[in-house]
Image (cartoon, rainbow, N blue to C red; front, side, top):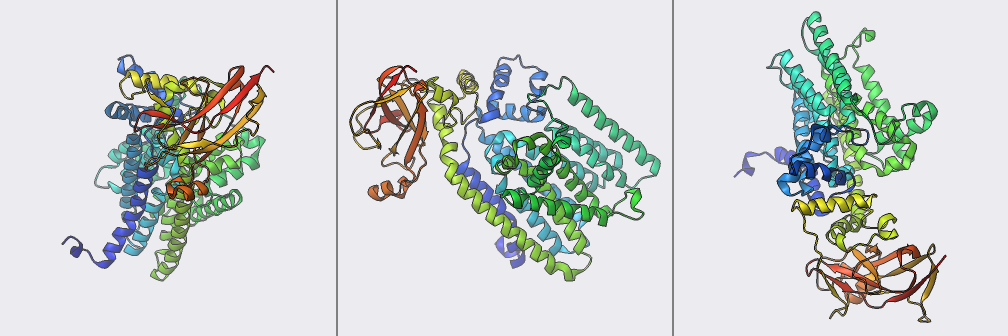
Length: 581
């Protein structure tokens, strides 16, 4: 009965709006893991202080990297205590932020594009929906800690919304609400401070007498300066900022800047830079196009101001990111999908600026449709690429959960502490931070880290093999600094859940000095065992003799079966003798 109340056009529009959101929900449901990752481990000491009632304001206000993430820390702490630190709650929070952001933009657009016809409005809104919920932000979608990117965007958009969509309120009230939103954004991420200056044209666009406008502008600038002053109190970032990097290496910073702008659409360095240049040039064109004459007064066509504000915020944010990160090279931008969340605002800005540019004549609707089809095609290709690459890297993501559960069985070997393939290093390069965090989680009763797991040395079924054993049967001889590689395959028979880790032990030790990620192609194993589940069951690991005791050791390989709370030994073993260097 409900469907009968909608026309075919309305149903089609509803489906087009829902698809990007549904795709995101599927992506998160399939690939998110309830395990703290990287910077999240730095929050456990705050949780411990809160639990014991001795947390201070400075614990939340202190600098994190280059940012004061006061508001995110408060949100994450509240979610942690409400959920026993289920990190997926943070991801849900990010999604909620984006949903609110979309509806705020939709409301602004319905006012600013009301003269262009419903088709321009719907096309622009659907493109915005696809951009906001795009999978190109996969790092932020799967890492709840980075909810601050979405919250910073939301604070800017809400400030614009308060000014333009709540015209039933007084100008003073709207500006006050916008100021509150900017203040929250300022202490969500450093980029939030940029929301104050980019909103100045919006403050001046409010219909009032010139004297009233100037008074409000002075107050607005005063609040901006006040926010910056508070931000600067005891500002001691972990890494020293490099404000002069642009003068030292201008081309590096410029290329990084354009790459960050183009990253939501293209993931190849040269093409990303060219795409970013096109987007930047397009924004400059529309900025000058919507300037009112005389241009030197810097007054704009009213309908364009919200979108110019959003685009300017995106550009300034991308520039700040470039100055801070360009030294790591363009490739760093290509793998840092978390930066796309702010770059996407430039695309959204252009979507509406193009609509404003074309809406004066309906004959241009076909041009906008072509523009929308091209944008949609690019986003579909990007989504397919992200899904494929995430599937390939998922064993690394999933291994964190397995690794954390068995943390009491991981030795402080050189491999576990330093190797990029160590499952502890994959959670945080400072493995001591993970261990301390795990202790705090256990103390708070948030996680159980078992200490009495079974070791099954003679399983009834085959769980895998060590490969490439020495033909002579003699020990492999290495010195402490030399490395040795081991490989094999591993499965959990008769189970949908397959192992993500193979763990190596020496001698009779019931602990592990190294691990391997199970993710290499194994079509031969899948063919023999007649199941596609085993198509990526191979593993390989390289470690140095420093991870083993001096003398002769027998290396065993194991998989962990979480359902049975047991380590199961793989077939075969290798003898190694480590000699003094």
